[in-house]
Image (cartoon, rainbow, N blue to C red; front, side, top):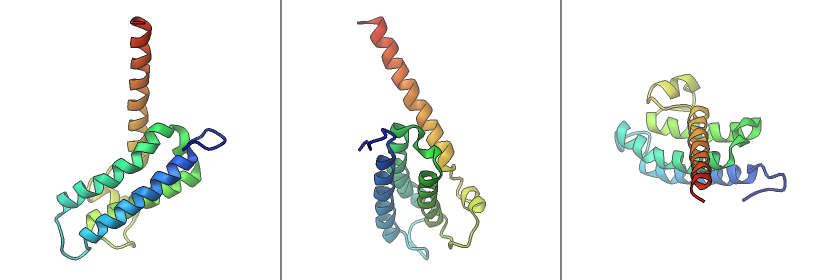
Length: 130
């Protein structure tokens, strides 16, 4: 999904909505009281992270705009709240520290670098072996 400006903004919005749906479905499996332990919660929540970071790796620069960053971090925060079994009143810093969840900006930067390295390696191989 590429928009007119070729900046993958629609792709990020679509994947954020999809990750939100995945998170909502998984939250039914993980009620705040009872349910699976923190390790199992983190494993189930990683599905939502994978859906979310897929478009970030492809889109590249899209997370640098304030609007898309706000949408992705809000969904990522709700996922972290579900892993910790916390309420919405817990601060963002505590939500990241308690379960050991890496902030989405750092995850996105790592995925972007990995995707860029893979592309440059493919181009180098194509030039060496035409």
